[in-house]
Every structure is written in C-alpha cells, then in structure tokens.
Length: 435
Image (tube, rainbow, N blue to C red; front, side):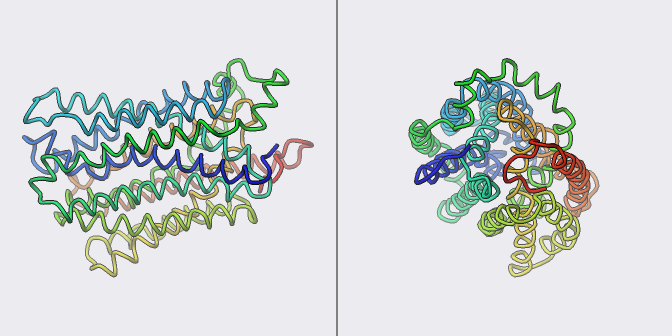
C-alpha cells in the first residue's frame, strides 16, 4: 500500500526533516570532539584526551541496540508516527543539556560523568530513529520509487552531518580559541532545542502509514515483534548487519572522522578537517540520491556492492592524499569517498525494508541498523585513532576501512542469494523489489 498525491511530499519532508534533526544532534558531538576533549579532559595530553572523548562518542552506540529493541517494538505495536515523534524530543533534550553542562574546571569529574550520561540518552534515542523513518518512507512510497524515497532518509543524514561540519567550520573561523573552548562550543548543542521542537511539530501532523493502519484494522499487529524478528529472520539480521557496515562504519572512518584526524593525529588545524568533511558530505548527499535512484533500476545489492568494492580500492590512495596532499588532493580524496559511500547508502533503507514483513519491519530495521553501528560504527573513530597511536602508521584507518568493505561484500552476497530465492516463490517478492 502507498500514499498517493501531494501527501507523499509531506511524508518525505516529515521523515527527512526529523531525521536531519536527530542526526544533527547526534553528530555535533563527533565534530566538536577535539574541543570537548579540552573542556572535559583538560589534564590529558592531546591524543589521550581525544581518545577519552571518542570513547564517550562510541559509548552512545552501545545503547543504540537497546533503543532499537524498545522503539522498534513500540513502532510495530503503536505505530511509526508515535515513535518518531517521541525519539526526536528525547534527542533534542539530551543535546540541549550537553550545551548547558559545566566544564571540568568548574565541576570536576561530575562534568565528564554527566556528559557520558547524556550521550547515552542520545544513543538510546538514535536507536529508534532509523527503523521508524525508513518504515514510514517505504510504506508510503510508490512501489517503483522506493529506492529514491528511501534515499531521502539517508541523504538527510548526510545533510545533517554537513550542517554540523559547516557550523563547526564557521565557529572555529569566527571565534578565538579561548572563547570557543569556554562558551562557543555550547552554541551548536543549544540549537538542538528549537530544531527538535520544529521536527516534532512536523512529525505529529502526518498520517500513519497505510500498511500499519491496515494491520490494526485487520488485527494483524505482531504481539512480540522483536521476538519474531530474532526467531524468524535471524539470518537476515546477520546478513543485513554485515551489508550496511560499508555505510554505517565507512562514513565514520572517512568523512566524519576527518576533523579529529586532522587535528588530533596530523596536528593540523581543526578548520582544515572540518572544511574537508563539509565538502565531502555535501557531495555525499547528492551521491546518496543517485544511489537510491539507480537501485530502482538495477538490483539494490549490486549498486551497494559497487560502492563497497570502490571504497576498498580507493582507501589507501585516498588516505595518502589526505596525509600528504594539499587542498586539491584532499578534495579529490573526499569526493571519491563521497561517491562510493553514496552508492552504499542510497539503496540501504529500501533494501532492508524489503527483507522484513510489515508487522515486524520497524523492529527489524532498528535492530540491524543499531547493531551495525554499535559493533562497527560507533567505536570506529576510537579504533582507528588507537591504531594510529599504537602502531604509528597513519594509514591504519585505510586498512580498517578495507576490512569493513570485505564484511559488507560478504553480507551483500548473502542478501543477493536470499532475494533471488524469494523471487522464485509465489507472492513472496515485495512489489517493486529489485533483486
């Protein structure tokens, strides 16, 4: 079932706008991690303070699977719209409170403890975002345009990351280091409040999906959707988790990690890393839509496979350009990363949505996405920073990225076999599914 007429545009705006707010709130911490390291861990040296800050960044991902189970269950029981409205307010509240925290100099050890708690709340909230938004878009989308509709969600993440990087670039350029580290860092976090309220207002005024409404009317709502996912779809949890690490973890190792890599590892200006990240993420959003569009014409797993293999091939050359190159070389590297990442990200929401039935879709999507992020994405910046610190090899992030892409290829092979098998079964293939 799908939404017809002008209501489709409203749904896309609601999903994308809310998703933008969620990911702006979640990502701003990562971009300001070099600054937060000095605010909350002033007694540590540069690299150790950054590692501590990145550890808290990763800790939020540990709670994402918990949020996925809770909000995935509620999304399959109470509806996609209800969950999406709730999680955006939770995220906005936690982000705003981070902006109000005292520094270590003012509150001592309580400051980093409070930062950790609020970051965990962010992780809990983020666990419910992807599954709800992807289900909302998929279930409202025309059957032959599910790839491009789903790509709006992934693209909104890239835009949120780009805005976060752009704001960071502007603040570091306009403010003195002293003011940035005393009060200026609070500004992007405090912006989370008005953004969150605006996103909540948009989401509360949309219709529930036709699929969920039909399930309610026909008494087909799953009693224990999470239990059913693990019992009946565990193979696709494994394959789906592997398949999307190219996007979830790959994005952190490439584009979002650049500010921390430039300042904390290469000892260059934070503004250089933020600018490189901003340029790459802006291009990334466009490539995501291209990837979704292509997946409505070619099998989705094939588009994603091309992106994963491409990332593995360019990983080492691109990191060499980042380490040794000037502005032009850095630009080439981030555009290559953005292009191949876009091919892996664009088809993902639609592809995963086609792997689960309506009554457990929210739970399945939330679990797969959160597990992939918790296991491989959230700690990726910490892992690659630690690898560089322990080995002294500046190409360590590239080798880690190659390993991620190998895992993604294995997961995509499993999904391709599953989808081809389903295509042979009567009434088993979702309308519009690209196998």
